Length: 283
Length: 118
Image (cartoon, rainbow over all chains, first blue to last red):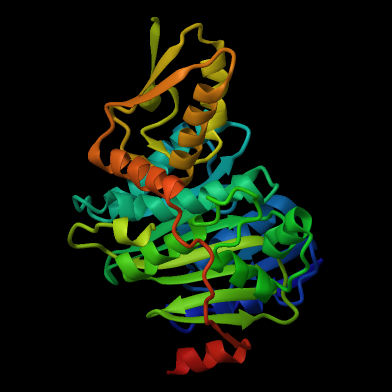
């Protein structure tokens, strides 16, 4: 079995995290069963941990750990299997106060999924300090991105995970699916052939794969809430390309010899200190 | 006329995020022998834009039917929830320009290393 060495991160910057993700999955074949070697790693973050969890979940890949602190942390957050029920979520929560465990939301279990998503979101709000008037800004992007998974990915599972870095005063969120990805969705639903870069751009511009004219706002408005209302940084990755918005500078990065089957969304928001009105951003 | 109330926070959850919750509610509503259904948002903290859109579409569809028409009322929503419904309903009436052209720079993966160094 191929051994994939996960490199140690040199900084906590979002571009560095994206680069680590790229290095980790570069040259990994579609659905290939591999062993992820995390022995060199002494710090992990949602943008690597959640895609690894999702990949292990679907391919049955294995992993090896070295650093004791990393091992203990990964156990605390529920890596790699995550939790998929409210009771498991609550058990996992007792292990720490600065994270929301890796959670697997399942399409079929609609009401149960809504309840799990509710406690996940309430926990995010709580670890961010319960600042009155920030609930909508915190809930909106997660709810929209998770809803997109079940609307578009053609996959029955979505993965979510959040970690607050208390000393750094920011929260890192990650939402992952292993579905068909954006370019395949446009191809199958609209019969248009787009590269991954073009498909990401179309999605950001509001072109919905659904015929309903009122659809297609979710991604763009959620990014506005993250980047403009919450002053965060943002990554959306699908196939062999990623959109990156850092300090409102927007780029689409091509990722050669890399392919993520599905969509990965990650963002970082500073701990909100005052109420935030999202109305101007949700159009 | 008989009115039946569905308590959303109990039936679904206090945060209503996904579009497909409307399908759960629709199948429940179809089983209820009443012409008026009150969807009670008491204790609902948040409704996503997608879920609000789907619930408004459901309300319209059930009310437009020739047979087994049902009137759906949204009641007891807090300000956040009511605002979300108002925004989505306003956009249904007068849609804003949905598709915009974005000017996004395309870069290769080496750009990330430059960004980290800077």
